[in-house]
Length: 221
Image 1 (cartoon, rainbow, N blue to C red):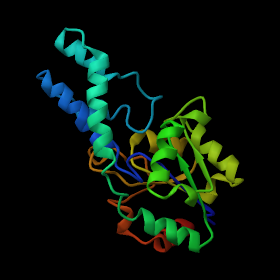
Image 2: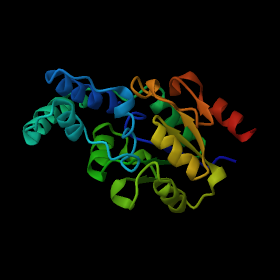
Image 3: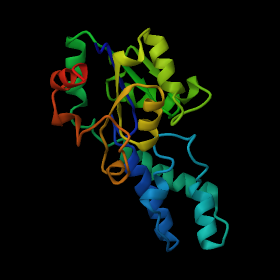
Image 4: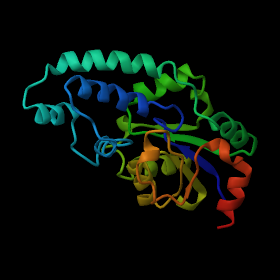
């Protein structure tokens, strides 16, 4: 029986991923180039799957060095302002409420740094809802490596078949599957353009199906 729900953060609880991509796309277009979604998708949800660096990639396209500090500061300012205005994604609050009513443990497993994840969860009033939060600062390898998910399982004292993971990216789905956990893919507008075929189930939104109904399907598999 399922005892815990494990959520990714970026793109699953809060859509930080489309604003990030769009901020870089604006940088590329200012240099008369396009950033392909497939290229960006290599690093969405994890830092261990690819050595893709947008600064280096754009320098290769233009054949000229960038003022990296200027690009980073100006792009980051726009990105952070956009993210600060993003709402909690549909269905998340309802899942948290229902999970607590059912006595399920709740966790976050994110490839982002602790200050990023904790800061946004606190701002959104969600941080106290989770029994444990594991981030890039807690592990040697982030997604698609399973270390984050294994750390959550250990912290919650549960087995692989007692959890459900909710992920939005190919790197996250792969990490969950490598940890042998049932994974539900819930893509955002950016990751909906990427391949998530490795997931056990895919939803357009957590608002698509009540948690109780999803649990019946997973427990009955």
